[in-house]
Length: 292
Image 1: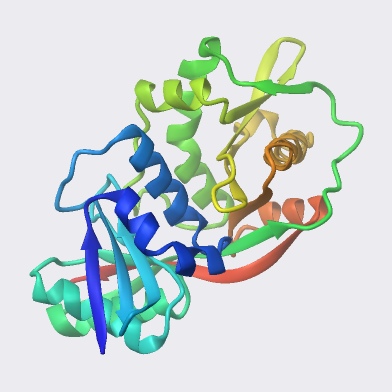
Image 2 (image 1 turned 180 degrees about the vertical axis):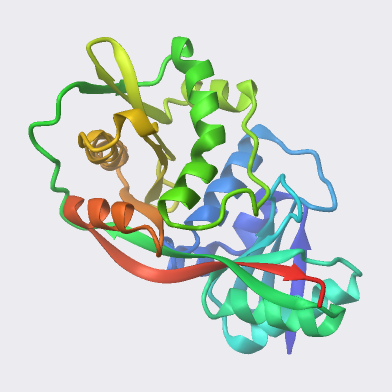
């Protein structure tokens, strides 16, 4: 019998789902990183901030979270059997909680979205197709002018502006319509926490910061690189490749392996990461639930 349990406590979620999450550490990285951070920093429970596990009897077979701070607060769905994905969508309907959208691993995320559309009425639109990559053999670029360093508080305002422009720039580079999605808004406090946690790498040329790469330190053995941002006027010089290589090295230095996401439609990022030694693992997608 399939059951769905919702957790306001991220530590309890990690403990209850430990075996399931550890069995797929790359695919679950987004969820485990958020849950681990919430468990350490604390979080104010809201209707749109929870974690969930799907069980078949006593065995955990699926997981999801709803932590997106922007409307429509879409779910992030982990790999799970088809019937478990349907059970998750139905559990949300039973608690009268419209999911807004379903992002994550295919085909589970698509099934959650389609079943939700059937239950609530409406239609599913794919907002973005993405791909999860894992680093195999790191091949750093050579001959790139400048050097990498960890971000410092003097970089905070610049990094905040660049973080907030990342979604627009990445959609534009992938040929997607801009302005069609609600973007994450990063506050000065968000950037301060990243700098204090040493989770920002910048590339500097003659004293000028020309690129930034964010990353997370390993959870369950994997750390994720991103976002990766070069302003238009500094593109084409290899800064992104060099900085991502440095962030990947720092993740490995911390005892983990590196992973990252790309937009399937972005030829630039896909080419760059393949050249650095990343290999694709699983395709994912972001789905919106819209009126019929």
